Length: 289
Ligand SMILES: NC(=O)c1ccc[n+]([C@@H]2O[C@H](COP(=O)([O-])OP(=O)(O)OC[C@H]3O[C@@H](n4cnc5c(N)ncnc54)[C@H](OP(=O)(O)O)[C@@H]3O)[C@@H](O)[C@H]2O)c1
Image 1 (tube, protein in one colour):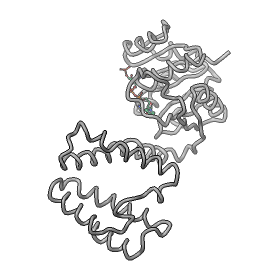
Image 2 (cartoon, helix red, strand yellow):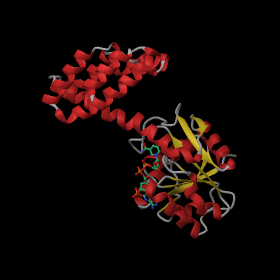
Image 3 (cartoon, protein in one colour):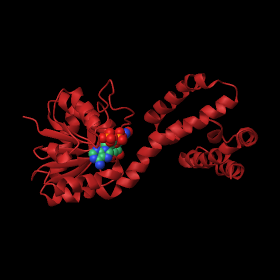
């Protein structure tokens, strides 16, 4: 018999968790959210009548509780449930923040519950996705031994892999995820603006650049970061880089600093494995600074 699970915070992650935990055979003790409408909507998807805007009504009998509110509300929500005796002794309480440690759930621990965090390395753009967003992804887990072991079981049931992260390294771990996901969007925005200024309409930018993006990812997977690098910097072609700087400076000057900063970092990557000579690196850096 699988554990019963309560979800507090019926947004994108909470609703997805509810749907796919129910599909994996967990009993949903119910959904709670700040607005009754959000809780009702999530409950309606898996056809349960257990929903409320009073979290402890839903959490008090659950084996496992997910606090999937925005990060800024997790600690207070946990304290509020604790102060209303809303966690059973031996319950396991999780949040899903990548940046925050499980120690923010200390109030639940004081009630005799186990605490942990489960952060899905995934981007949830909607509460009702048409596919299981946990399938094949990695979920980082940390917390009490008991919470970590339950988290690993849940991750496997959702179709995900899991790894344990040190509690005090979560901020850097989360910064890495932000760079990989959010800053990739920023980087592609820059690329689309450059190609747009070159005359390729917005609607075609992604289509035109997609094979290049996909092959770069595939190369990184196959040969690693430094060997995946191609283009003018790794070739030591400082004339081309100087022309980029001139054109960007005259047509889209607001992107110039970012281009130069990324270029300098790219020179450093090109120097690993001695692919780029010291002499070429020095010349490139003087242009890019
Ligand atoms: N989105 C992602 O890509 C992603 C990825 C990995 C991890 N996470 C983590 O997952 C957690 C949830 O993020 P999300 O993107 O799902 O956020 P979200 O879509 O904004 O959903 C949060 C939900 O919590 C409800 N809520 C707000 N304050 C509350 C309170 N005091 N008590 C009860 N419910 C409250 C919200 O309000 P209503 O009830 O008014 O609707 C909303 O439905 C965060 O810790 C986040 O860091 C998110």
